[in-house]
Each structure stands twice: as C-alpha cells, then as structure tokens.
Amino acid sequence: MRKTRIGLWLVLLPALALTGCPDNGGTPRICENPALSCDDGNACTTDSCDPVLGCVQERISCNDGDACTDDVCDPASGCVNAALSCDDGDACTEDSCDSVTGCSNVDISASCNDVTACTTDRCVPATGCVNEAVECDDGNECTNDSCNAVAGCASRSVPNGTPCDGGRGECMRGVCEPLDCFVDADCDDDDACTADSCDLGANACINADISATCDDGDACTADSCDAETGCANVDDSARCDDGNDCTADSCDAASGCRQSPVANGTACDGGAGVCAAGVCMSAAAVEYQQDFEALDRENASALGDDGWLVFGNVFDGSTQDFLYGYGPNPAPNDGAAFSAIVDGQGGAAQGSQQLSVYSDYNNTDHANGNLIESTVYRERPITAADVGRTIAFGFDAKRGNINDPGDPLCPCSTTATAFIKTLDPASGFATTNLVEANTTALPDDWSRFEISLPIGAGLVGQLLQVGFTTTATLFQPSANFYDNVEVSSAPTIP
Image (cartoon, rainbow, N blue to C red; front, side, top):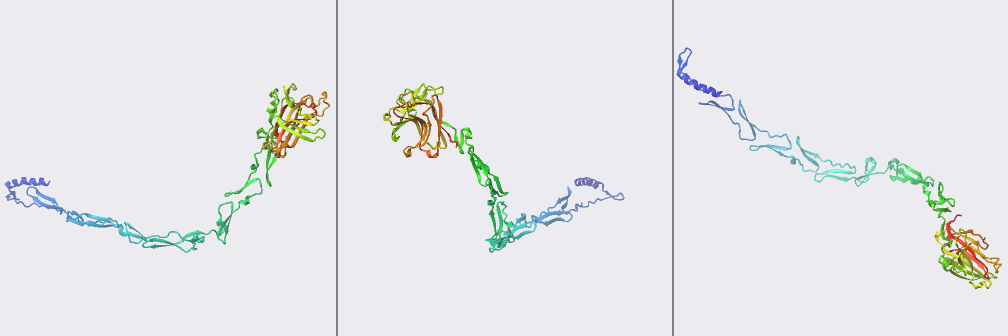
C-alpha cells in the first residue's frame, strides 16, 4: 500500500510542476513540497524515508547479549531487558544464572547431611533439608535404647529380673522370659491326656500324664489316650485269636484271653488234620503197607530186603528163666526158620501171597525142651514228630498149623502174639511199652486185627517195633498166616 502511494506521488509531481498550483481564486501559484513524516508511532521500529521507496520502518533488536535477561520490545516504550528468573521451585536445588549459559539448577541434597548418625537426612523439594531424629526403640522392653552421634542406635539389656509383659515375664539377658503361670488355666497344653496345674511356689506349669487312668480294668479292651479326645477303651478281644483251629478263643474281662480245646476229632488245617487236646495233628497217615503180592516168593532175602527183621530169645523150659538172645538179622524167606512168603492161603482180600510166621526151627534148643521165642518184626526210631500221635498196627490173620491137634507132636503149648512195643537203647533195650493181640487161637478164616500205642514226649529216641512173636518148644507146630499189614499214625484222641 505504501509503495502504491509513493508511486502515485511520482506520477502527480511532474503534472503539478507543469500546471502549477491553483489557489482559491483559481490563480496558479508556485508548488510547495513539505517533508513526509514516516513516524509510525512504534518504538520498536526505526523510521526513515527513502527518496525512492518512501517511508521505511525497520524493526529494532532488543538482544543485549546477556543469557540472563529476557529481551522483549514494547511498542510504546521500546526495548525491555528484564532479568531472567532461574527459580525451579525445588528447594533441593541451588538456582543461578550465567550470562553465557543461562540458568543452572544444581542438586544440593548431599548438603543435608548433618554428620550425626542419630538423624535421618533427606531433602524435601517443597521445604529443603529435613533431619529427622532416628527412632532407636527396638520394641524390646528388656533393653534400654539410646543413640550415639557416631555409632548410631544402641540397645543395652536392663537388669535381669526386671518385670516385663505386664508382669507375666521377667527380663533375662535382654529377653523377656515368660513366667509359666499364675493360675492352673495358664498351664492348659491342649492335651486331653495331661492334668494341667500351676505350681505357684515354683511358678512352673505341671502337665502330668494321665494315660494310666484310662485303664478301665477290662482285660478285653485296649486302653489308650488321645490328645484330642482323651481316654479310649476299644474292644481288643480279637487279639485272643491264637490262630489255632483246635482252640476256642474267648476273652474274660477279669483274666483276659482264654483258649479252650475244641472237641477232640474236630477237623482242622482245612480238613488236613484233626484236633487232639487242643493241637491240630495231621490226619491218619500210613507209613507202611504190605500185602506181600509184590515180593518174590522164591527170593530168600525178599522179607529182609523189605525191612523185616528177626530176633530170638531162649528161656529155660522148666523155670522160664532167660538164657540168651540172638539177632537181629534180616528175616529169612527159606521156610526153615522164623518166616516165609507162602501162597494159596488167601481169600478175596488177601490175594495170592501171605506171610507165614513160626518158630526158629534151626535152633537145636528145641530138642532140649527150652522155649524158643521167635520174633518177626519191623523197627524204626521214635522222633519228635511222633509225639502226640498214636501208632496203629493193623493186619489180617488166620490160623495156620499152630497147635494142630492132628500133628503127632501135639497136644502142644505154642503161643503167638502180634505186638507194638518200645525199647530204650539207653537202658539196655529194655521194653518200655508193650501192646499185644493174642493170635494163638485164630479162626480158620481171615479176620482183621488192630492194636495201637500213643506216643509221648518221653519216648523220643527209643525204638518202635511192630510184628509177630511165636513161642514154641520141641519143634511143635507154630505157624500162623498174616496179610495186609499196615502201620499208620494219627493224632492221639484222649
């Protein structure tokens, strides 16, 4: 706009110079060109007039080159160079200004240290340094707490015995040791199996075990004490089961467990045994069985090989005093003495072969009228396994030619027996037991016989013999027939 105005003046000036300047009467006068005022009324500009350009206003610079002033220009008054404020509102900084670098805010928190260990030093931005006294109370009433400017907090024990915890304890070496009690209730240990009381004299709790008082006097209960519930008396009669099939188990409140033998013969061990006097014994067991069918009748050692023995005893025919004995020897099968396997004497149950037992006709004392006791037998030692059992000896028997009235040597006096006996080797083989069946006058038909002997503990180590005896003289007829011999054992049933 200003340039436009200046340009217009340049056009008009020549025109005016040529035409003159009319006055009010219309008479031309000489033109006047007064100086143009370029003052824009703004103190922040430098005003000038350029003959060509006309008025020129240039903004002035108020920068005084000092970083610590805030340089501005006021159009009314001109430059204003106000001091710059470096205050950051933080009391923990030191504020300053450098004319070159400007504001500086330096942390002064470290200056808050008052060089005493009894304060906690810090700087608060709003207020500056704060030096708060250190709290040296350790919460222990058995110590005196203090603070040393150099070492800081210190705690020293109060005198031993100083009351603490409201009188319920006393200080010992800086620790409040609780006193046990004042009343019985102080001593409750939450254990139903103790009697809790306070010994005021000793200031000590007594928690006495009272488990023994749980005994209800009943031998059939298990008495115990539970810390939570107290005494318990539980039926314990099941412990009376001794695991023996042959006893009836019961419990008496006064005397406790009782075991009474069940009836003898009661099955036990799953039927594998029977009860005898409260003991389960294995059922009857056959230890030897012989029907003589498998033995070679023509073999002279057949009976001896099968375990049969013979023994002879000779007695005075008049006084019957013992004269001598001989044997044992394997039983012969030659027909001349003691024994032989024969045939043709059996019935349906006896088969074709039988045992014939008779006198030792090889002994010439027959001719002297002495009594020849001829024994055909089996033998074994008695062991602890036999104790409580009964040995049974069973056999079939029928008459042979013993005391045959048709024999020219008769009338005769031969006797015969079947036997079970025990002999004690420690006493010269003295007979300690003898059970006999008289076979002197057997029927002409086969009959079954059985004899038995209970074995007690005192017989362990002795010899057990089963067999047949014939006592004859003067070569008199003496034979009997035996078959289906069986030796077995079974529990002794009183």
